[in-house]
Length: 435
Image (tube, rainbow, N blue to C red):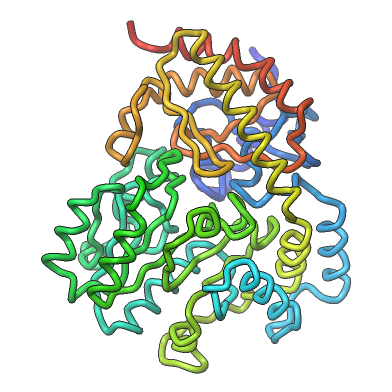
């Protein structure tokens, strides 16, 4: 009988008391198989599991660790905040300070409301759009994930794509009846929707660069078309930058793209520095419709939590131009290594980028423009690739439908170590492919 490792024991213990043994589904390794890695600590670009094994991390807590894990100044800021009290249920100056930092990076976010999760931010954005317009219909794109609120769990990507689920049990038909799902990057489809229903649409919510069905950047002019159509018909445009915000540039995808001015933004991940914090921002006259000034209700006991705001402030202050340059450079180097290894192994693939974010679609060799195409990738070959990398001490996202995340501390030595693991992983992917 094989020895029971710390990870095995931890997973067995967790499954006895936690549904599926995890607090978020993709962590269960359902799409890649095997036992999840239980992390004990992290530092810089490295994770350490309960067995003491070291991994180079390419998950980065799904985005927040743009500075690397456990950055000393961020940790010190959180420790200092904790010493003053963990939660007050009352306003703090830090909330305004963090909101000011968000506004400084994204001036279109004239006012900012802090919440605890990206799901909550997107849910609030939809409610606010409906309250502002007096309309009911919402447009989203297949494969874009905006959290797990009922109305947005229609053809979502990310964990739902991983599990192969069309939606979710417990979500009523009524909850999604007013959500219109359109293929991403489909110019004709979105024009047709507005031609038929434009005067009933409250908002279009989009990942301005999709990263929850793998990385699928917008076609040139697609986001501009969304702005033109929503403006013409009196609907709002919501940019969900929970993943891309303050990650792909100091001002997120909006800062890279230029020219498109959405009405509302949602932010998460980096804005909280790794602690539970997200934000909704936008034009002042829209944001002032939120309670207590306006009729659109939103509340949260832990919104603007002092530990989370301290982490967010420290992270945004430290994430300067040099940080983004290092992240971008590391991403370019690693992407080149990945595609070179797969090419040498004869593995058809498509590597796609959105700023420093990228992902690999194994088994495809033409552009992936939408969710339907992303679903045609060879997830079995990815599974073999993933486990070969994990065996070599490289922790990839445990799903073929996720972006890879690097940090400012993924230096040349770290990239070289990842590169050393790639040939064997590419060979494993090749062996797992049919024919």
